[in-house]
Length: 138
Image (cartoon, rainbow, N blue to C red; front, side, top):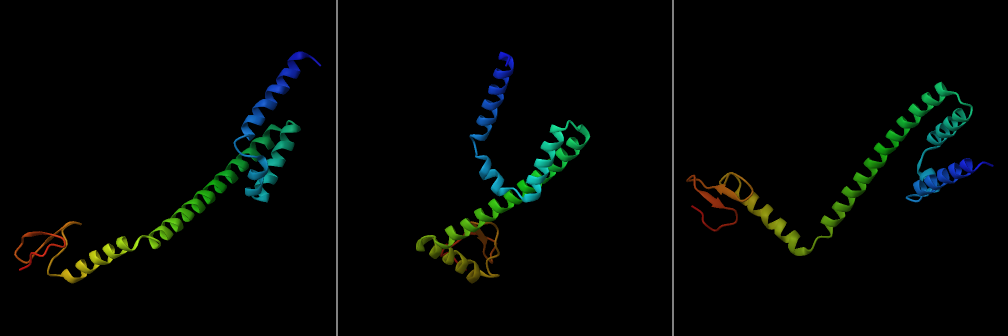
């Protein structure tokens, strides 16, 4: 075998091994759907037979399938993060939940007497700005 062919094959092997080192191919194949894997196999067969038109069409379909997969995966990750945030809120320390209840009670008790201006101020019936939770009343 000529030296150039051997070095080319080993270089290709090194590149493919370094690409796989981030995540094993088995892990990727477990997550992909059967249809996507079948498209990838068909594309490989078309490339082997040097059928450029079919290879191009299958490559487009593979890219579209991968985009759909990534959309679904992102949605799943976001849903998982939202659920984790809900769990963190539920397991918040009692002091934080008591403070939330206190703020809610102040908002409900004030009602229409103190219309809300922003998160930290209210206007009393005389038109004066009053800090939330202050004891100054008319």
